[in-house]
Image 1: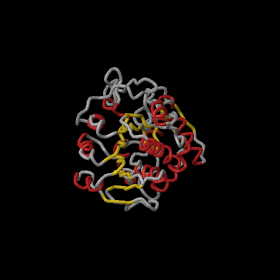
Image 2: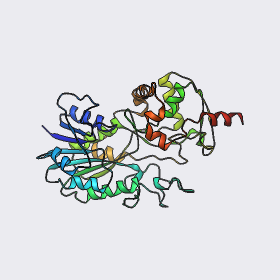
Image 3: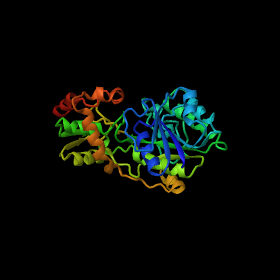
Image 4: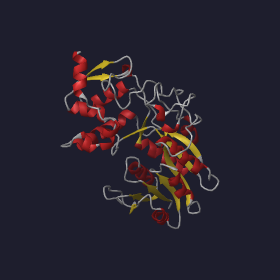
Length: 340
């Protein structure tokens, strides 16, 4: 039986990856900080506790060797070197990266979003041949590029598929963008405001579709870089309408022609230019077809978010989301804007 080790198995992406590989006949070792404490795997999945920062512990999990390592939580060159140091014991690897590595022709990318005119003007769609930021230690994006370069430098010794994920969505997300609409509906807010005429598009990536890409890449080892997104890239207005349909509510939307007015109209998808990625390389090289559409994932996501919010303040339930979007639910500002 083919053997696989999944690092970061208890997270948003790791869970469906373990499930997809197990269904495909792999003997999976699910490695995470909790060691499977908060997960219930099918019979045949082995759970182990792993501190990713401990090189010796990671080497011990790999043991005498495995056919595949899937690394969901590799963030820098140091993490890459942990894997490249085990090339004699790993058959192939699949490692999750991010679409944030891309930059446009003027050198703008995710790292320049806070600068005047810093939003990138990407081609639509963005292919894997698009330039990336320089590798380094300064930002999340530069560290991801450094990780990618380190891994691909040993492609002759270790076949590695790098998957660049978009706006990842699904249960167990630390940054659930869908909360923007779900919480408003739960709070009885039937009026909303969307910037950029509600036309913003920020390509989502279902954790289940990423898991399908992992499964396909595991069956066809090779060294490659692929975008890892859904088959569709809905507008923010379309996302809101789809969530309303799942929750059985009717809402009214006002639109701003341009950017948000302070916090009013700002959502986790609000971008002035489309951010859409080309999935044709994954289709061509792996035979990838999304296993779910964005809308098909929403019932599960809405149910999970509703349960996570029950009896809790949203900031306590999702501290990372609150840190990134502290004014996500500034209802007073919205009411003031409507009456101005």
